Each structure stands twice: as structure tokens, then as C-alpha cells.
View 1 (tube, rainbow, N blue to C red):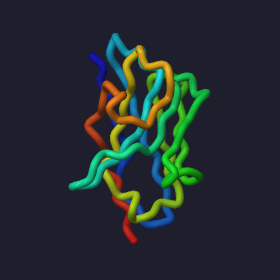
View 2: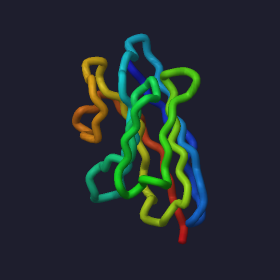
View 3: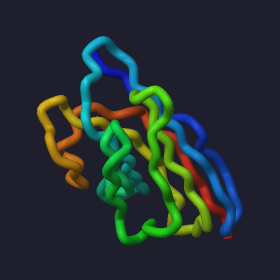
Length: 126
């Protein structure tokens, strides 16, 4: 089984920065793509960013493009989301996700992600 553990959430003022981390573990972890999603109460989980585990490809939601950067760590099973110029509307629970090993292209479709973390809360005050 694959486990994803997020960390790095917290409270920050508008205009500030945070970096989220996600570590994947489990002997079967062979995902080629990982992503970040976010969700607020009463709304659907929405795509934020995705990356190939080799770091060669990234894809961002228009709402975060130019402000958020997703990257991989020295270990391929670790990814980061550097968030800058944060806005109150970025407030949400942020979830790390990984696709199955069969997925061969980067995607923003949450239904194509097989593994999910428990989430970490990000709150941006105005």
C-alpha cells in the first residue's frame, strides 16, 4: 500500500509564503505523476498543480500560475509546493495525490489519482 503524508500547512498573512511537502512511502510506490489539490467546505476538490516524478513536466491551474511552484526532492518520492503571494482565496485544505503506475501522462483530473494524503490546512488572513 502507498501512503502520502503532507506537511507544512499553517496560518500566513496575505502576500506571504508557505512551502508544503509530501512524502510517499510504500513498497509499491511507482507512480509517475504527483499532484496537489485543494478543497474548501462545500466545494469540490480542485486541481492546483502536478508534476512528473522525474521533474521534467509540470502543470498548474490558472489561478496559481506564476505564484506556486511544484518541484521534486532529491528522492523521487518527495514533492513540494512552494506558494508565494498568497491570497485569502488560497485558504483551503491541501491534498497530495499520486497516480497509478499505469498513468503515462500528466493530468489535472482528480479521478485519475489513485493515492491521497490526509491533507494539510492552509489559512491566509487578509
